[in-house]
Length: 369
Image (tube, rainbow, N blue to C red):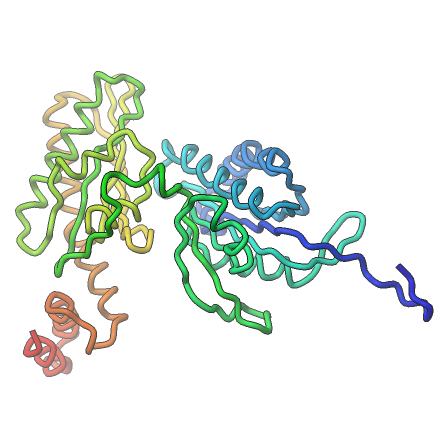
């Protein structure tokens, strides 16, 4: 629209903007460029049609990113949840170091538009929210939260006012889990407190062979790992009858953390092909969703029970030092006046390992136990 002085006023509209990209995409490209491009195209073929199915319009798909707009805020959030659930299923049979996980940000804002593109802070905020999201999760602005909280039954974590890069005003943000509260909670939804020492739940290993008669192998590995870890006095291990309630379910590790009161979750899979067996395991800090350790084991199936024992021993042996290292890194980031006894011990041991110049510092932490 032109004004009397000849100035053309830009066309504006209110829109829900969805911005997404692949977490760690550059690392994946550096490891295997051809496979990464092939995998990305396969994932895009599955998720891009969802945007139009939920009433959205794709604005850009440069590189690993996706930018889309929706007339409905609820549709934008529903689409994001569908994308994350689809990606979770597609990643189920993928090696831990090759998984592709989207981070998604959604904002409701005023945008300037022309025949092909949209512009403005409404888009920039969505992009900044995407960078705040954990891999596999969704982050939304308070405007989106206010619009959908009574319409879509999801878990919303208030992460407070965030000063987003190149955005003048701070934005209140909410982290959204892709699991619906009513469908995902098992039994009493009460959140259990973490114990005063490292804690872990070992989930049943998923059998990817498609043969129900082979499930015993994955169960056997998980049970034996539980037995080995239970021998560590410094580690709190959730019993089998609790952790195995998640068998056959699409697991949100943060839900496991809240329901079982654990910091770490070990999950894995087994696949049999002819006389070969492949087992994968990944250790996750379930309070943050961060991967602590992952490995893959390929073995000839010359004696199934011997192979089971070998894989179990390898995983159990690797987990203990991985947890100890993760705990030390975690407590180093905390202020000394907020440490519990276990954390003070780990902080002291870290200083002790640095040599005689740090012995006095280590002693101070040990005396505070």
